[in-house]
Length: 246
Image (cartoon, rainbow, N blue to C red; front, side):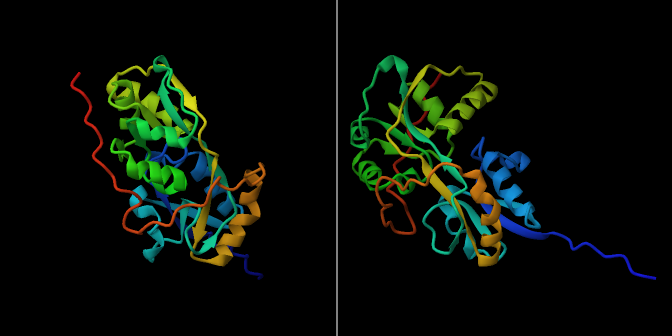
């Protein structure tokens, strides 16, 4: 009697993602635009994805944990970096009624600016310099607070990925029963490409064999190299302004 062939179980790959960044990463359902790309690319090569979640401040250090096989949403971490698999589209967002004119990153130095977590690391030298010299710059850990503070006139400019910002508008209505206000988007930044850094070059190569098909646009570098910053802090983070009493 010929024994039946036993199909090998998929290998499990544990990837660290930033804590919920919908619609890219939705922690509650282990899903999202970005996670679905990573999961599909690994599954096609016989790997099952197990996601774990870290704060943005800790995410880049994820491979220090022996249980993590890779880190998503990075672009300059040493190691076995994958091909680009997704790009975020960061914009400066202001209230439409104010008609603010923003021509460059340097213009942000004159306003109360709320960046997304670790924005000063990801958006290049000029942005980093602006964040350091602007006493009214901060990075609230909860991106929903960016929307609320802008709408309550406690901030002048929000810097965020446009998809994340508009997703947070939906949450604003569901969680706080507050209505978004009309905004204007200022395209001050190039779209930022992201990769996965893997512990194993073998898994990286397997991921690349499919992931590169998800990134159809030509690779464009950042407009300037990322600044070299101390590992313990991307920027001097000032307290986020409190929401006014309503």
